[in-house]
View: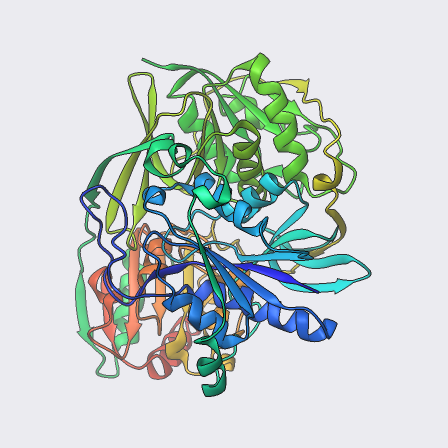
Length: 259
Length: 320
């Protein structure tokens, strides 16, 4: 059982985000592993453990050769990583990202399953896993809250508006998992030390046989024309509870005639 | 200027057209001369409401036989695009909407822009707007890759309004063989029983967060929501912690709500959460930490302990 996990290294969400003059997200500080991807990594490690054989390979894309976030996932237990790093990727949209990741996945020998988080915590596009599946011409199941492998098939509980669907697809397949689906492990000291020497295969766009003119700004097919501050919502009254705050809430609700 | 034709994906829940589809149809008809809809599945019982909201035609694939619809609907739409020539194809940010839009973007090799809350015309080009950094900034993006432009819109971005049209004409949307890629099959459906109004449609939402301390304290949220004939909601923190199902989540990765009143109890106001609820008409926040960001947008902010305020509030409402 070999699992490929798509992961993203993002600016720490605890720091206020900022944009470059060209409207790309500033990524010059330290990048960390997107928390929503830790669920995919954990799920992959559990599936490989259960199968009793195989390994987890990470694929990622970053413009500046950054590996700090990948080391976090390697420390959790992934065996190796493929990182696509190329200046030509600045400004890449979701489809460009999917093209690059699909090509990177294509360099991994004999995978049974591709896992990804539903959406990154910085871009939130939520379409990349499904686009990767489309480019690789594989079946896919999105929004998984549980994943099981048996008899060459993947069985998934897929979130729906009403609850969830039980969905099955033949392997290899692409599955995106929601946050909270498993409890991601903390890397052990041993894991952190081991991660330092695990292989990270860094590739350029050209290495993957992709024409640099079709990804990034050049091929995005979309142009950011404006970035503006959103209208701010003003704070109203703030009171410290002296034991009677509930009365103020009741009065407020009364005033709105919702009681 | 107006576009000549926009297509809108129809999201169906339990046989009924979802509110988000009617919101998008209402907006689309202000941008294009003709608005048409398409649905993965049967159009039975949908033509009247779609027509009333501006769609003149609905293309339906008919029963898909238990397969997951994304691959099949995307292939069918891609095949129809050349003959029908829509200038844009709009989706709601829903489970199926995202699946279909993503697969369609690959089929047509066109970008898809997600998570939009606004759309306007700039000459012949469509511009969409997206909130970033927790809704503090708005990015406007112009489609430059030729038609059709593919865009996803968040729920509650537009107001659904009837246009007085008659039933939409129903037409066939032909599906073909999608091979192995289309082989994901739905074996069984599970409907989570909920009482009271739906989270994204309720006039009152009472949401709880980490400040509740432990999972059984969420009962207070449920009780309060019931007393106010509203829906309970939750921050991502307690959904991730497994206290409540994912369907309760309000925020960037959960539901967008715009109720008359939103009561946030023990929620500090991470940007992730605020994006999902800052469009509420009135916001009441109860939190121990007077520096909590939620107070920056609350109409009534109570600096206090939810374990003291909520029981008294529940008691006061029960006494009425």
